[in-house]
Length: 158
View 1 (tube, rainbow, N blue to C red):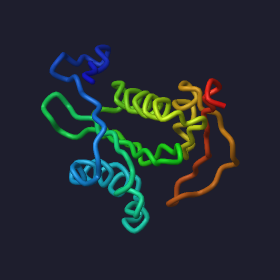
View 2: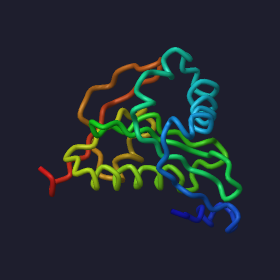
View 3: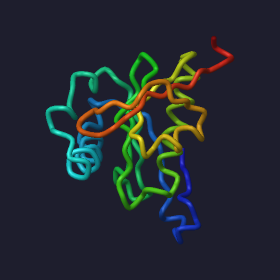
């Protein structure tokens, strides 16, 4: 689905992007590139913690610029968990994260998933709250970064 980047940042139609549902088997290099840049290089997440056996069975969302470059991603597990959501720094604040999260919520609603969960870095809690997620845990450390669990209950499905 094509999305136009936030015009207030001075971007043009060429700065639009698409969100696509993809698999690890077909798009691993693009997904890995985004996650390596954001989690491993920027946030110093150890390589051994970033890669696990869940990627191959998960659904993935990939944000692609109009030029076709990978600019963001999210991993959707079958249990209703959104994880590994990342947006490259030049694209932050332009609606890419919101588009990824909306696409993830839509995916789980189509799957009739009654509860959607995620693990939010503390600085991102307010972002997720705007989409109906509520904090449901105390703060804990994951990969050296403080997080809190959040959930969104789909009232029409419970």
